[in-house]
Amino acid sequence: MKQPNNEAITHLRNRIHIIVEGTDTRMGKLFDVVLLIAILTSVGVVMLDSVLYMRLQYGTLFFYAEWFFTILFTIEYALRWFSAPNRFRYVFSFFGIVDLLSVLPSYLSLLFVGVQYLLVIRILRILRIFRVLKLKAYMQQAGFLASALRTSQQKITVFFLSLVLLVTIFGSIIYVVEGPENGFTSIPLSIYWAVVTMTTVGYGDMSPKTPLGQAIASMVMITGYSIIAVPTGIFTSELARNMRPQLNPITCPNCGKFGHAVSATFCDRCGHALHV
Image (cartoon, rainbow, N blue to C red; front, side, top):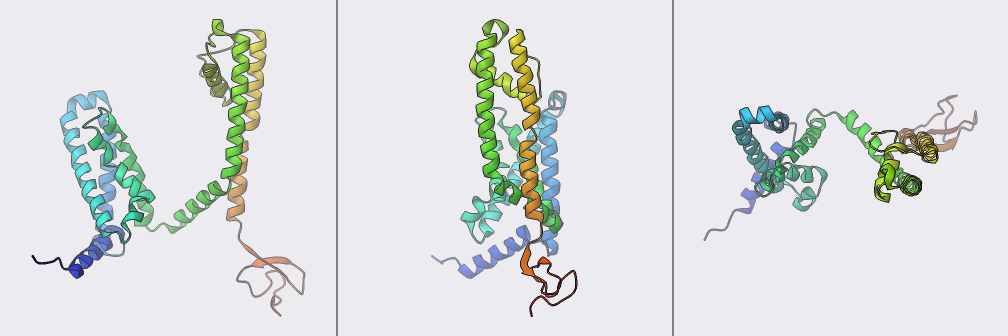
């Protein structure tokens, strides 16, 4: 039996990789444009299929359209996996997981009814437009946001843990004060009320009836207004710190200005040479 030509397979993988991942060639640009149109159209089909009168009138058309896009994206996923330099890395990358999740609900819908509506996750694939249009400035700003989230993760985690303890305490207190006769039938339900009240959502499905319960509710509301800006402040502080340009801790020998750009050779205040 004739063995497969490894060079021919490698050449084929490289050609496919250039088309599906590259944007500098004519075929690569065409592939990306067609892919973006298919993503938007498939998401629109899923949304329209969730509307009852549209589903009753065009249900069969939507069914075939969904499976057409599913097969199309499955082939695309297989091509990306086949041509990836590191297949394991692609499978577990962000876009690799999104590519898989964009087709998985259709196959799961054969076993579980209604799962196909999770196909709206395909909208995440529209993030490829940043790569297609080469919007590097937008990607850089997204990098700043991601970096700020990473650096503020511990502080925000501590804040949310403190918040969980706080709503648990308030929920337990309101359960003792109001009791089942006023709608607070359990501590978990009372904690739900505390979360809704502290976040200033206020559905109105539960409300304290006693004067003491109303006083506690007022405390919860005031506390909610006090702490709602905490995670925003933490994230904004980290974002400003990450976006601040890195400075070289060098003092100008002429004017004494401390801190200059990393690549600076002369002082940006007086123009004196920094490295004498």
